[in-house]
Length: 296
Image (cartoon, rainbow, N blue to C red):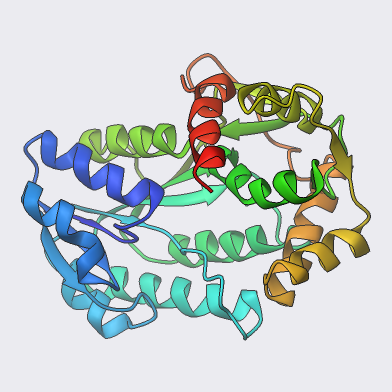
């Protein structure tokens, strides 16, 4: 049986669906049973609990052929973001060890090679390091690019101010990936289980893009071909995020991450190849974005 954490999320749900369609047994872990009913109808076993609960996870991981593990975002967080990441990462790591799991595929990120200075991705560095300490565990880390789905959060700004914006410089090329492609890469490796020790693979999307290029493509899709992209100062970006209800610890983390992208440090080991390039383009995503824009 495969065990999928974050099974209601963008990657976890699709991975579970893919594995079920392939005839595999799947246990889907989530906090809300009502959000897992689609997977239950497809034949998944459900496990309802908290990813900070190591004892719960240990019981669910026992006998797993492989686990898909991630630290999900938590948008109502009050504690420091790193503390939350550490709690979840430590609980998952302990459970993998206590349940004697042999194989895990981890949702990580570009920048996870850096021990500090990359906001929330520093937490993924720490998570990877903890997993490496588990004797006999085979780990595949998916070093994913910037999620296309992150752009949904720009819809409010576009409608209210007629702009897109981050503290990321407008001309910085960034790997941008659809979460469906991440899920499909994860599924392939879960089914093959061809990794050993610690390995990582980049999941960078169809091509690298600047935010100016993204704003033009998304603007065309919503009938705003002149939609500008604005590079905010860190102070303005933080103020905007706080106004949108994002906790300060997350706002500070995103600014740190974008600083690392702006400097080039974040992508200092990234390599795009024909083998790791994934199929879904920003033009494909723009159709989803337009629908969300129309219905928001």
